[in-house]
Amino acid sequence: MTSTLEARELVVVREGRRILDRASILVRSGEAVAIQGPSGSGKSTFARALATLLEPDGGAVLLGGRDARQIVPTQFRTRVAFLAQQPAMFEGSVVQNLKTGPALHGESLSDAQASDLIRAVGLDEPILQREARILSGGEKQRVALARALANAPEVLLLDEPTAALDPEAGERIVALLRELRLRGLSIVMVTHEDAHARALGGTLYRCERGRLAIDS
Ligand SMILES: Nc1ncnc2c1ncn2[C@@H]1O[C@H](COP(=O)(O)OP(=O)(O)OP(=O)(O)O)[C@@H](O)[C@H]1O
Ligand SMILES: [Mg+2]
Image (tube, rainbow, N blue to C red; front, side):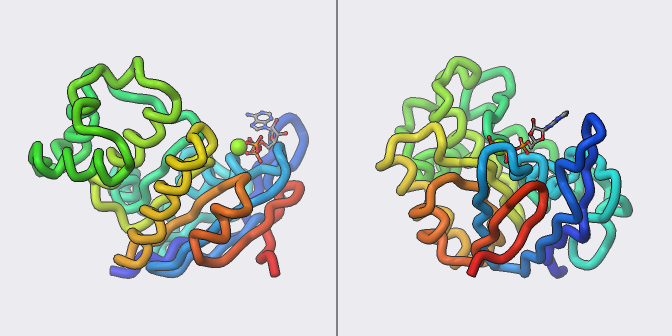
């Protein structure tokens, strides 16, 4: 199964304005891509459209060469995990949050695997028993990353995953993403941080007024 993810000339119009203006990207299996650009240039809209969380007014998203509209949404979301700028937690504890995805697929995440994931994102094990919805923004972002990884996706889409983190925690997340990429996961990361975009070690794209171009 190939997990090349492609956006082909995506157009999104809101209030008569083209928020995405034929935005295209090609993310090959195991490739890392960082997207930068000014506030309001369309990065989050693009990330959401690429995750098929919003219906574009033009263009298409393709996974493994297949139009995403022909792929069952739950299957698409298992293969392509999306992390929002402000992720929502499910009700219940952190460990329950981590176990939900695998359970939906008839699999179970062990307590040891949950501990490994939570440590990998730079959190301490006691957080597993805490109520997820009352965590801080930065803690939620890291739990959301661990929760996404619990589903073993092929592509990880992240919208500003380090924005709510202190520098040390942010660098740790970028280091983890780089490591995941070396293990074959494709990564698309929207970020404001130049250093993080570069540290990811992949292709750099620039988003300007709803268009994407490779930054050279
Ligand atoms: N549903 C909507 N209706 C109207 N305008 C919208 C809608 N969603 C987004 N926009 C507008 O589209 C533009 C792009 O928004 P988007 O959130 O994609 O920007 P961004 O590049 O992620 O910005 P930031 O760096 O601040 O997160 C903004 O001007 C925003 O106000
Ligand atoms: Mg944004």
